[in-house]
Amino acid sequence: NFMLTQPHSVSESPGKTVTISCTRSSGSIASNYVQWYQQRPGSAPTTMIYEDNQRPSGVPDRFSGSIDSSSNSASLTISGLKTEDEADYYCQSYESTYWVFGGGTKLTVL
Amino acid sequence: EVQLVESGGGLVKPGGSLRLSCAASGFTFSNAWLSWVRQAPGKGLEWVGRIKSKTDGGTTDYAAPVKGRFTMSRDDSKSTLYLQMSSLKTEDTAVYYCTTGGVAAGYWGQGTLVTVSS
Image (cartoon, rainbow over all chains, first blue to last red; front, side, top):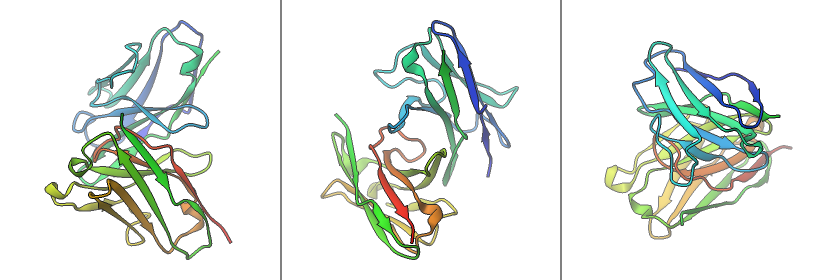
């Protein structure tokens, strides 16, 4: 099975832009779609990005996703940071019969 | 509006059994692939398993730590997903979320807490 590695934490100021990376350990990052989930403290996760770069309805366009085959990684970029963006973010991908989650990144907006 | 409401969590002793339910509404349940994801206290998300729609075979896949102990099933007439958990271990303590989707989560429920402790 492959692994997805995320930074443990990132921090940035309101109004700035932050990027969270998600690196796949083996196999190509482009072989299966990557999703991103947001989990605020005490709440269930919600889907922010699906199929690498698609936003569900209701997710602000400040959130964007991409993949980079050269680094075998996916990225979540949040622009115009707001204090409400402070949360844990998880990337996720899959193979034919199983899913894999990254370990999660705690975003602090200070 | 899609809603997923889990129930059935609680305190159970090691070696015991528990059945979780997930009542769904707001979408065509019978066409949906569905999954369970869990989160141990203070830890990250962990995939538990998925079930395909009956038209796609209705088959199940499970994560290695729960294979042979957990069984997913569905009742399309009731729009309800189930997770039968047996031979429970302390490491199964977690909030269990049901989600729409078979290769990725779309909508999430609010979760139900399962505590395995003597």
